[in-house]
Image (cartoon, rainbow, N blue to C red; front, side):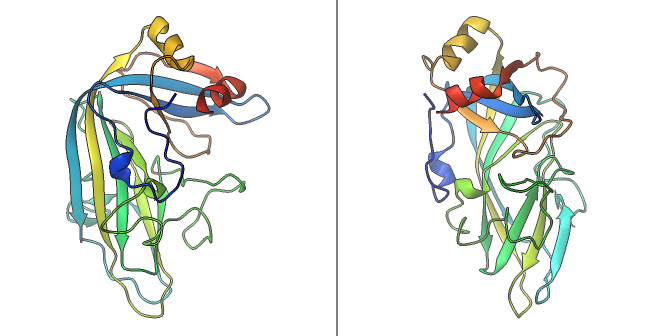
Length: 239
């Protein structure tokens, strides 16, 4: 049983964030070949704090123009410090965010990790800026109410990059509202508790990192080894 089970992409991210003392599991694809499997890391939220940014440092994009993938820098897109980066001394801090976008006609593409654009179910190649799939916009995630369509999880050792496309016939300057929660967590390593979570006896929110694309992921060295599940095992708990 999941703590929160958003059934629609327009579910506000505020309804998907966790409360203190709730559990979450991060899912990393390990193999997407003939025998798909995933590695899961389990955590309990000890402290929750609000995460909220207005990001107005993106340049104007001309009609039909693109802005390539880069991090959201403190002094501009791809410059200065990454505003979403989690410092080394916080290995058990997790950001759980939605991204609202303004104005209409701006498509936002996400790469997480930075060199792995998120990929939809039906496509074999990674998303590229300008594709007609795997993006969100104001319709899916409005500026005033970011939704799970833009749901993003960040931890130490993981970065997220954003790319943009202006689909209109006039220059547009994207404005982002990043909203959600930060969690200070403790890792759950007891196999007794993990097995009870997997059996549905303890509520937990499951979040997949990096979309469906296979990638070489890096986790903080402080994290204990995760739990490997087969595709069938994962499907069972995700129902």
